[in-house]
Image (spheres, rainbow, N blue to C red):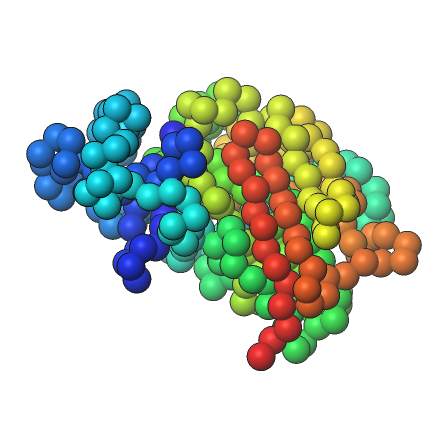
Length: 303
């Protein structure tokens, strides 16, 4: 399933994306099954409902195609261009966990040693914007870069998760652009500030449940800048794969439903090019992960 957080008539709602259509979870379920208030209003609460809640969503998904005309008539289904898609989790409850130098070719281009252990850092929840929202250039930096990444979202609360059971705790996958101010990253010698500015976390467009992604380590990911491919790799090249990341991260540390981990970027970042290429007003950045979706974010100047 492709789950979405969307806005219509100034209200934030949960929905299912299917064949170019967004179906409202609550209203569509009520119309088809006659039951009210089955689903919550936000993605994290839905994940907290566990397998039982997702089973009800799947039950609804199976009926959508045959009910499409009626659902559109009752305004519980919309074409994608009739709504505004937000990030699947517009305001995470915690900082987003990110991975540095998790592709060998990116370690090489940035002159880092290949790490022996995962390099974790975080981005604050306030970075998150939707899949088509603008990236705003900050006043504090002139060296803004893109980073295409596969992110995964936890669906169960736990800790000390064994590697062989790690994917049981993953709810699904989404796309993230780990936008970075390279000068701030360098100046502060720690990545939180350079990666934590407002609008520096485009995410979405969907939360694709793990049953639709048989192997998250066989996905092409790309960044296109103004139509030019800048990054082109595959998640098979991750140094630390998702099961290892889950196990290591959860060791003696509780993870919860809705926690987000972004798995790192491959080579091709602007800062490593000669000469460097940094984002400027008017640029269009498109980040795609195969089977999940595309972020399309225009770069704008700060007002």
